[in-house]
Length: 300
Image 1 (tube, rainbow, N blue to C red):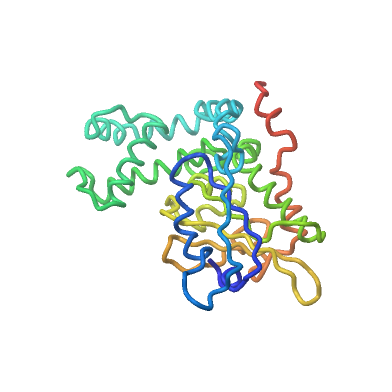
Image 2: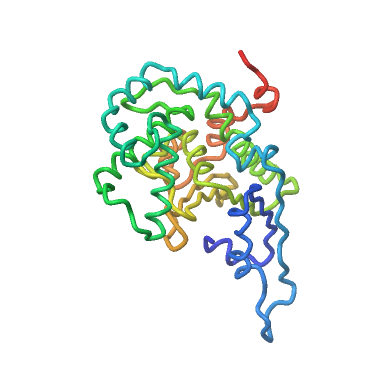
């Protein structure tokens, strides 16, 4: 946790993992900072915090817009038919054919690229024996194709595929989470009752969905996926003149220091030391869809 959080003994904390078992395992990690040791002199008013969750299909915060939002699938399906996307796959057809031979399964679209990439990524992360055909150059190419195809189908403009961003798809993917954060910050700015610290334990795709709205995914991650236990931190500050500003931090893993990425957000590029609250709020409020489930039901 950042120092300002560790130093607060009166912290009001809310923890929200998604419905999968992996994010719920955040609790043992938090125990070290929330449960007091059984030693004399330790503050007795430190108590464990409850973890709140909702069924997966109802989770619009951690699940990149909910698996039950049919419009997400509809819009992704349309982008799969875009000329630039089809030509990108055709351009790399020889490589995909070779992967198909090596993997002994058809590798011909974003879904199958993702499936192969995910399997090999997990094996690499856990130091398992890799297939002999997986050289560094092969992995680099596969990783690039996974990042680019996934990024494009989820709404981003991607060089070499297409510059046609789909802002609605970006909003459906992460607008609900962003909206919750903006609402919490608004309550704090207006001196309304609010939680001081929110924790969302989710997935790598939850991080990338939010970075796509900020248009800073490549500047923060390069052509890479967020690593295990990497996470974003959004801090609301108040300066000595009473003005509020936002700092956005990123950690690449459980043992890496936080680095400020505020200046990489497209709406905050001129404010490296802190993005004024009004600019942050007004710049990204358009990605919050007022009636999420009504929009999800649209088929036009």
